[in-house]
Image (cartoon, rainbow, N blue to C red; front, side, top):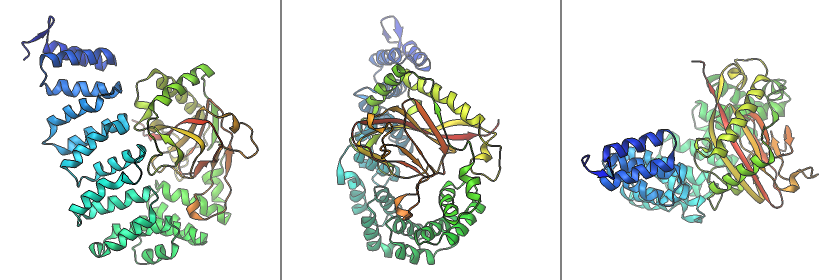
Length: 464
């Protein structure tokens, strides 16, 4: 087919030009060149896959159809197919749902695809249907333990805790002596506030760090902060980078009045607010662009968002000029923050990275509307976490109830602890707040309007 031409160009030349345009991020030109190449050779795998990549980046209405054609070349490699589908989902969101459904029609026991479909259905506002893929697969494969565990984990992330525990009871005989089952039951019971049930399960478990972590949470919930601190310190000894343990240990040390709490969370420079070098017009342009990528109809599963939506995929990997403008302004502010951190401390979960570089990790935008808020949470995979305010309702400025304000340090409700936040911040458009990822943080509800933010985690980059 390389002999064929489109005008005066051969297929090979058209595809070469398409790849060149793609490498230069001239996406419209790349789209047209791949399309022209496919007119000459419609069955070219490389051109079909190239056209699909461009359709994703341009967020075309028929991007999922282009991706479906690309996937058809990979039927013999289901693992590669699911990787390709994950890429499409990260950019297209619910529009990629037909790809996941088609894949599960062929591979119903694939856990990654089941989790993906459940998340997409939640964000598409499909209500209780979000686990239909799981229930259909489990009815045909009732002894698949990994599928059941994934199903329960997904329900747990959706806060359907009683459903999880009832289903676990029904399948207990299948999991006799299974450690993963026991740990999931303990953690689910902890989150449901069923401390007696959690305690009974944990009493029978070993002393590995994940079990000790669950015990540490249980002891906080049962008003035993001394024992909680002992267990959590043991986890930190074994796993110094376990931010889940550090998050709970901050609470335990605060309850005990331990002077190490200031070292962990109170040093000057660990939390700060910075103004971005962006004017009102630039912020308005960024806000307008972000609204176009908030396509979900419902809050995401397993996230802190309540009464709002969160963008899919990695926001800072998008090619829009507004995103590049924002990322550059953020990088400038981050360098300023980094320069003012306390000295390196190899024992400290943040300051051990003091002399390393920082890079953007996960990044996303959240759009909250009237009554929306973030439940208290922390980020187990970051070094520093953030809140960046792009557009805010008028009522969050200076109101005495602090509606819509950021709280850092208030523990999550399931711990049952009446502790105030360590700090509160009044949101301001064009402002960035940075804080250690292990600190619990959330926001207060607000009455009406739109609260549009960008958030990201920073990860440490070891010296080369």
